[in-house]
Image 1 (cartoon, helix red, strand yellow):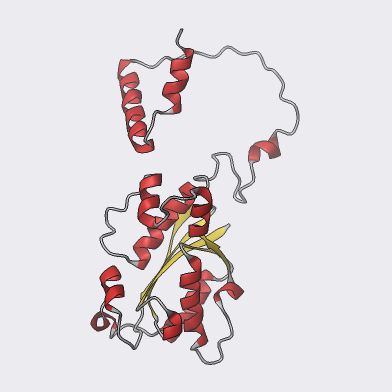
Image 2 (cartoon, rainbow, N blue to C red; image 1 turned 135 degrees about the vertical axis):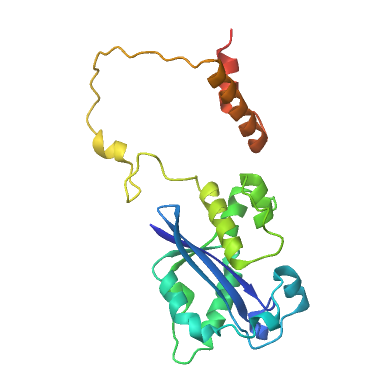
Length: 240
């Protein structure tokens, strides 16, 4: 299963008013694990950048003046996302801008949804957390994702952050006993009833140092989860 987590930065908020894409950042997940494959490019928009947009991402027309134009990177970009599930936070915004860029290219009939499936992680977050803030910063706090480097919006950094959020929000990493296709190997290998095999196993108890390290880890989990861990609750229920 190949997924591409993507973000863009633009010169403004409205593609229909001629605003353009100025940065694309994308990272690859295979079987819900980050790979080393990245796509990142700054783009010369051949137009001015709205002051409000510049305040968000910090990119200037001067900085972008020697960067490639979208036409020069279009083929490489489409090749990177082809056949993948494209995960974008507030996907309609980014897809509208990317489709607008493609529409400006001569003899280019492709649009984003014609080369890959698109999933809107903002819609998923709103479904999972109705009535709550679901921007990237709020989701980072909710899922314990480090966004300390996010002083300004940046397409590649935001894509990397979204990848961590998306994996956490949709169930975490794949199971330990999973095949390369994501199927549960336990069901494949143990369809027959299990047989009882008598055996004597040694009991190894934790020493004082190990118990102290365990308690310290539970304290960290308490702090990150915003509540008490299930291990502590289970232990309390077992106490007479």
